[in-house]
Image 1 (spheres, each protein chain N blue to C red):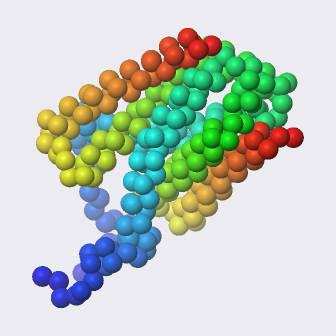
Image 2 (cartoon, chains in turn blue, yellow; image 1 turned 90 degrees about the vertical axis):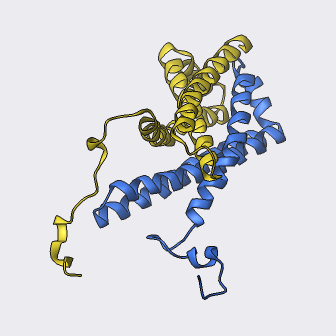
Length: 128
Length: 132
């Protein structure tokens, strides 16, 4: 039996090879659950957008609820894919320099995807 | 500690090639492959959104590519990958909840997720064509 009053979660925090305990595991699950809902939103939106010309598609995406939904989807998807790719890199790449470089490229790519999405959305939603 | 001088010659645990392929193993590998593919496939959505923001001219160009047979084929693959990964994720969430660990349940869920992913993909494309 444990002789400490700390909970198992408290002792797991900050452990692991990346010193962040169960945080990574939890974030992957949290974003996974959110992604189920957001995937369904995205698919219904894609069907609604099918066949629309530029003006009609833009009008739908500019709707505040739709634009917010797309922004939320981008944040959750990018977060999920970034920590997912981090695990793939950590699993297969062992050279310290290449590994560090790829981990940085992962964050850069993910950030680029997110900011491109938000910038395009901003332009559509706020006019100009 | 006695073995600390093994360096690069440390023994490795048995890896993929020593196992006979089976369904749940393939689903595990496919979950990671679809995840990695979706990491890049998201660029399709970003490209489309950037085109929508850029204006009618560039949008028509990108829209034309998406509507070509090659574009539709890529979109079909990306949609299947998305649903496959979603179903795989749901299986993992069920296991995270401590349920369905028997081999029978695991294989049942694997077939279910393959069927649902394929079914959802077809339904989405039929709905998309019907809407356009």
